[in-house]
Length: 252
Ligand code: NDP
Image (cartoon, rainbow, N blue to C red; front, side, top):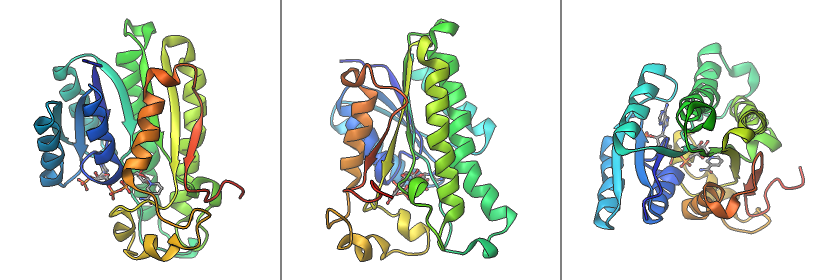
């Protein structure tokens, strides 16, 4: 059941880790990329190996082109690339726009948006039939914030994810004739460490009861949507961004 190599950026924790584990169980050799947390990436790979799968932890900042090349060089060592999940994401503490400076906004766009575009370029180079590849699929993790705007907290992050929504459609059209499908998943409030990294560890629990489905989502629930889009089950789906939000933001 060798499905080829899947690169999961930000695969060491949260949604990326759940996606890496599920992908390995489905027969992908998984590059588990991380930025700083080597121990967490090693735990994910140990779980994958214990289940009989193939996983390699690879450090690399998706906002750094030299690092991106190292991530894809590691993928090449495992075999032909079959897919990419652009999952790595970053947020900053809640602020209004008049409290945001260039350094903050640049970092948010560099990780969430530029990293997604740069990694996709490397993947297309390898998977496109135009370049002799066998095709493949790309799934971008965006956010419900792309539609809701995240006013008075994270408008920069929401704009960066909105750009990823737009990129998903554009790239899907660009490579549709080259054997590559490009889709996205918009998570809502998911129970991961992401909220703590945004300076608000209680955010998920606090918002849970006000959600249309009155609970937070799990990383595994997002991973299942990601891997459906990656799979042959979704063979005629491209340019779609699926909400996995328990109903949050479906009628903005
Ligand atoms: P976590 O904070 O749990 O995990 C973030 C992951 O991204 C980690 O593996 C981290 O690596 C990695 N990462 C961070 N910055 C970089 C970078 N510059 N280069 C490479 N990897 C990086 O986040 P989630 O799992 O919650 O989020 C995953 C995605 O889902 C993100 O794109 C996020 O924007 C999106 N999302 C999450 C929501 C939520 O409620 N949780 C809601 C909507 C969208 P390391 O372990 O080394 O730090």
